[in-house]
Image 1: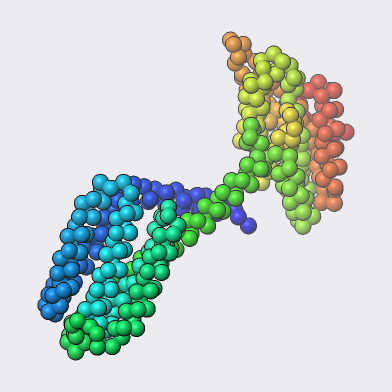
Image 2: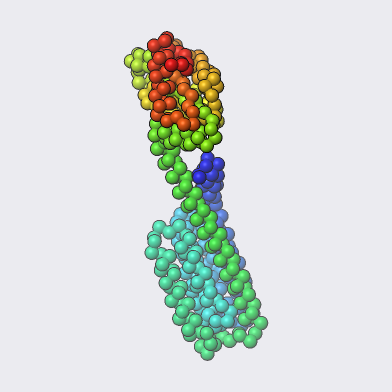
Length: 369
């Protein structure tokens, strides 16, 4: 069952995530990602230089300059996704050239596969772009794996040197970081989507269940609540109290002060009922100026005390319209329901007592036949 606590927890997570994806956080995320790439290529430059792989050392000089430029542009470029795709293109080229130069043992080729989930996790407006990255990477991976699994065609042979192991472990570390990063992002995005879906469904349910003017349950939602209360009453063997209240002379209020002000009166009356209703109880706008409330696990006397309190509080409310101050009253009919009672008969009994109260002077609780 989706509870209020679940709803508030999901809503809190959504608000937190929405805050995290603000423009400032977006800038920081891109900045640190590009800075990490810059640091990696500085490291690669020195490693390739010391390993005597001059072609890749020179390429990494351009890579360092490229990432330095992207870091400068990250604050100036509005569409930062272009920088991300430029970085992916650089990674594809670097991984391919490194494999051609030093072979498959250092495992630069794995970066061709590692970038695929990143391409799909980015907020793409162009839905084809991640698939282009995926097919390009997979094609290059397959071709390079087939050609360079042996070192017969590599430009440099470093398999028998310590640099092969150094490159391998560094690549494994960076690849693992990318994998953990991608998994973390996916987990949060998936949870965010699920939370948003649950919250939207709950908001739709609330919209379908709540009277927009009074913010109380509507008649349909109240019928569901009454069914649940009756089932609980049968399980526990305890009675419940049901009441129907009607604002006295409400038509006169509408005719005198207008329907907009009549709506204000309805909202105020609903607020009085809602604020004083026990936690276990529920209330609804039953129709027009009629309100229905039910209190589980209580007897008639407790219901009468609550009803009398509502009648008194409503009569004390002051309304001001065009220098005129007035108040309204409410008559309430209440009935005690037993576990075996049919709910429609209990409602009918309360309704009869309501109209008996109207005939007997209004502005009070009627609890006898």
